[in-house]
Amino acid sequence: MVGGKIVAPTSNNVDFNPSGPFALKRGPGSTDDSKNIINGITTHEWRIYTARDENGAIVPNTWIATSDTGLNPNKNFDYNDNVYLLTNAKPESPALDPSVGGLVPGSPDLIFNFNKTYQGSLTDKDGQTIGFTSTQLNKNDGYTSTASYQKSLLDINPTASTLKVTSTAGINSSDNNLVNGLQINLTAGQVRL
Picture 1 (tube, one colour):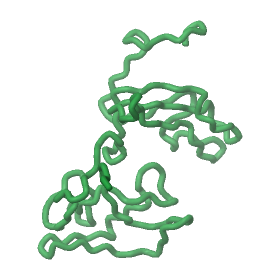
Picture 2: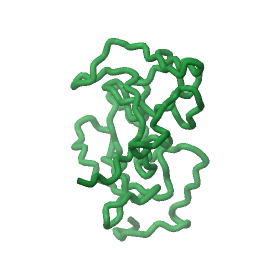
Picture 3: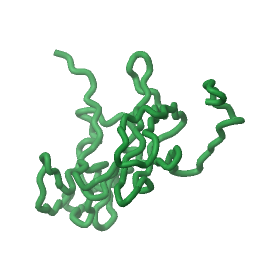
């Protein structure tokens, strides 16, 4: 807004061409929660929603970014103080991009023989790809699977075509602390009865 009027962005008032991952920031609030600490309390300042067209289809690389003003543990967290249309942007992790479809049931790519390289997948303790692209987030994770993915507990044997997963004490419930709950994106498609 300029002088109380909404002004459309142009190259004169918006010019940002990042060469790598970036965070959004408005005032003291960032999309990087590690930057949103006040009096030892971390607050969540932004929410990013997938933009959809009038038919409900995802608009690729387009997001509705909303923020709640100011680092204040007593704020209302309504995330409608500022609303932006963010275009030409992708998540840092391709696994978090809803416009990238998953595999279709019956796809040969869903059969893991554990004897080949799987592009874009998680790796085991030796850095070998395992086919699975992510883990189920647990209560100790943020927006990425830092606590729920422990590659030291995964060991692929390409010769035997096996994947050994060493279990830890953990549960998948309201107190979810499951480690290495391996998963892959899947597009279910249309079901006909």
